[in-house]
Length: 405
Image (cartoon, rainbow, N blue to C red; front, side):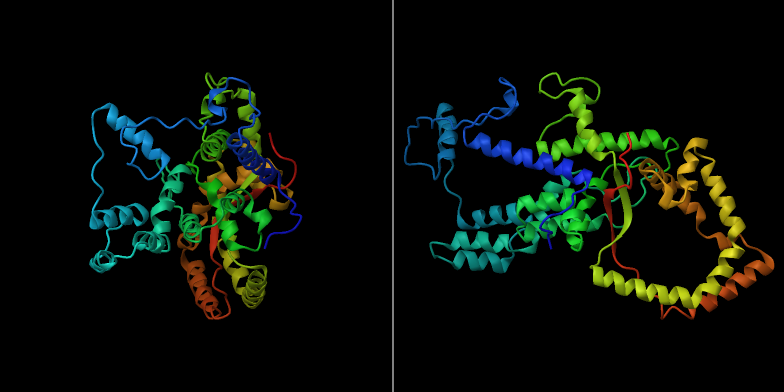
């Protein structure tokens, strides 16, 4: 439920200001008012309603747009095609709204319906279909460069990326108001922190291509911010601003300074891969059950961890060797003591290191391995106490402390 006076994060404040500016500029333009951009900047001029062209057949056409179509046809000496028959019309609108062909039963029902509102009711039925959201969400997903893997050579799978895709489908099917659709994606964790849908929606800013095994994580961080800046402008401003990364835009009034002002919005952004999709009450229940399991198994787990401690440290050291010495401090600093920049760098570095910390028990030998296997069986006896993991999603939030440069 939306708070009456939400405390917006820096990221939310900046991105929401973009959305508000778009809405304000659009309203002013349609009202015929002066849009606050420099005079002569053609992309930002208010739209003007053109006069309807003169046509020879004034009886043809169902709306003013048809007059422009007819005028162009008559200029070429052409006539409009005859109205489509009912079956053709049914197939066209069904493919358009759902991406699927009408079934035999749907064809028979529509052909047998001679009522004057048959087509209107057909459209309403198709809009109510779950396939409508599946069909039309793909256009939004294309705009925001949705993918279920990271890209680049490694192309690591994103196991929870589908949650954002499904959120968009549900939003279309629920006819979610566009302003709320924007708010949930740009600041869902602030506006609706107890709404799992809003948390999933913030995954919009996790869709950038990512080279998780890049050694230069500082450069990778910059490349991610470049991508976020470009994608945000394309999605919400319908502008390509990437040129201004290197120089003032040659045609649109977008300066290099403005580009990096926009990019500063993403400076404090911290990704999360395991945000729980549960209400506060559900999280509390899960935490209580988890605590009970941890208490019951503490001695077993402590001994297991002790057996693999040397292997874990060796794996961690091997992973850290990939990175420059000054970057290793980001991982070695305790999470609660890291700066915002260290939090961001540690997240990126651990994506490379974490896989090396798995299957440590496989490196044990002799009595240590035998003892570890005994402990594993003992630990399994407490599985009935361990709660199932909460569903999770890829999200973003602000990192703690001052925003890094």
